[in-house]
Length: 91
Image 1 (cartoon, rainbow, N blue to C red):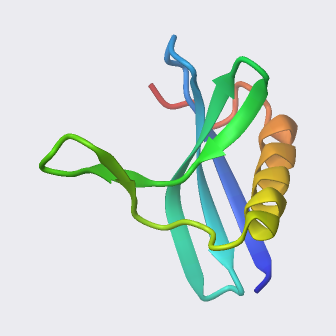
Image 2 (cartoon, rainbow, N blue to C red; image 1 turned 60 degrees about the horizontal axis):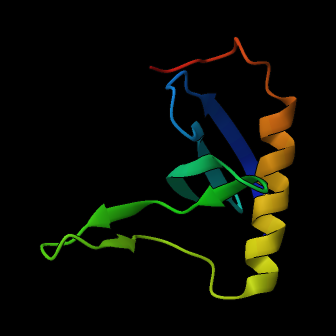
Image 3 (cartoon, rainbow, N blue to C red; image 1 turned 60 degrees about the vertical axis):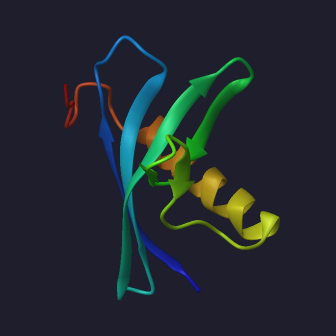
């Protein structure tokens, strides 16, 4: 599976959320709302999730292997760092 497109939408909130990302795979499958979060040890990604009736958050889509998760996170963070801060800001 190849990552064929990554689109970054930076946000201007005061919290730890830095951007929403859309990732396209093989030009045929897209995942919206991957989040870039600023943590204590640097930025990381959080997969799209929804809140269950019990109040827990469950990922809607996520990588199966840690190797692919690492690859996905690396590619997203490179694109995030290369996206100008004033481009496509969302509040």
